[in-house]
Image (cartoon, rainbow, N blue to C red):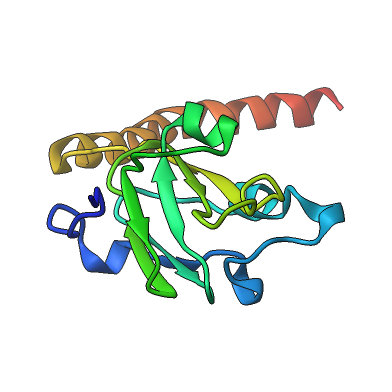
Amino acid sequence: MSTASSLQDVPASSSLEFQVGDTTGWAVPPANDTHFYNNWASSMRFKVGDTIRFKYKKDSVMEVTDNEYKRCNSTRPHFFSNSGNTMFTLEHSGYFYFMSGAAGHCERGQRMIIRVMVQDVINEATYTSAASAPTLIFEQLCPLHFLFFLLVSLVY
């Protein structure tokens, strides 16, 4: 079953697509680089509505619970695909846990945790009043700043 959903609530222009592992794609990492995918994911900033693309050959990808991720074992993943070109939409903030469904691949480092940032929701009225506040403060402080500068110049 799939938990990936459409981008109904998120404007398309604000969403990004990320290719997992960049040019490496989704494959078993070298033995000396088992943290490859977590290093890749931690260098990215994912938002709600972004999509991640898994490109792979003769493999699969599953979205699982944190306990299944830790054990490298899942009998009922939240999401499963073996198409070779899988898109997954990050539909909420928090953590997503991915692993290969191919035998032995997870244990060899083909797994990844993605952290999706909490999205700030600011209505237009709040934005407008907050944006004008610094201007008002500056206008009020400007004469004081000038007087302070003048006094300091006279002392030296």
